[in-house]
Length: 207
Length: 257
Image (cartoon, rainbow over all chains, first blue to last red; front, side):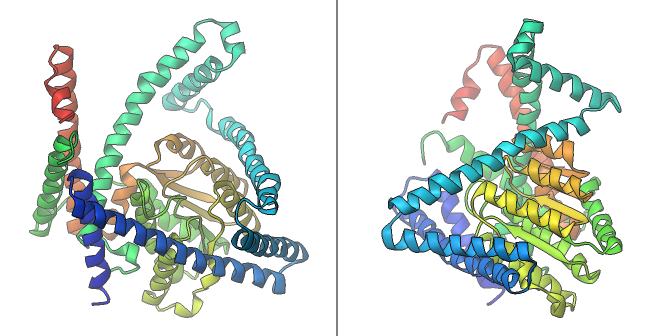
């Protein structure tokens, strides 16, 4: 029962979602909405459990970590509890909540995202080397695509933007679509194995 | 039936039928050979490296939840986590799993706990090494990068659905000289992983991983069925291209039914 109940529930939920996608039926629509609502409720409980884990890890850092770990973990816990309290008691539109989000969270996210440019540069520096035919083709096509996307490329040769667009639209798109078809069919196969209970390792059981 | 989905429905039924037939065929004793997947063969090497160096392993099952279009990638990543955590338990290597989505956290926790239990190493299981970081994309990336650098991981597994932050995780792993294995069906991120990690699983290879690692004949049979479905899809593509080139709208009408 303990082993089979999750499998039966998964099968029923999966079957309802698939049938609701293809068939117009009030019963299926209601069942689909209910399952989605259950998912939202489960996610909310999971957020609570995950938050407890987060606090446990950082509370341990505060009690046993280095000076820096204590400082950063304390900032995290104060921010977590503070924003949660403000959001719950005053609402998300309260000026304090909005300030913390707009002045701290959003700029922090943008900053980390902006670091991606430097990571792309370092990855390109390591990856674009002439070692064999494949890497040479990669280097040449990457150079053409990069030059086609900046004004200086068009200033060097007017054909770069068109050539860059051709690379993106034809060979790159062909490769992407091939992978997309393979991945889609792979997802169907994985879905069939999971819904039928043949693959159960995601449940933490190997048998 | 919903207008515009009739053909898709019957195609799905056909694909499922082919997959079930292949699984049954494999179950009845006809062996299925799956080509080598170097990324999965390298898992043992990565864990061996971590054991020798005495440094931990970092594992991330991606940034997606267990609902939505990217859920199969997350579940596939959790399946591979089961294998990795069993090996980590057997070789007494510390395994740090970082999670972005809260609903993935209980799955990952239970998967790793079960792996330690099966390996008779439950006393070595550290629940706080399975860490929920943040459900904000770049907050997660920053926190995971910090863990990779501070813990100086010897092996970095990045499997599942990713978006823009995968490059950061991979580059940070390179900075600490970690052995990196990645896998995703998020097509926009495939080139970034290919350029920055040592081994990678592209698209369907991620979904076939569980079957490959278990070597279960029935699961391998489903992978064989997937290949037949791919050939069928390719045949439909050729028919559609030829038909459209010759001026026939039959295929387009069929797809839009």
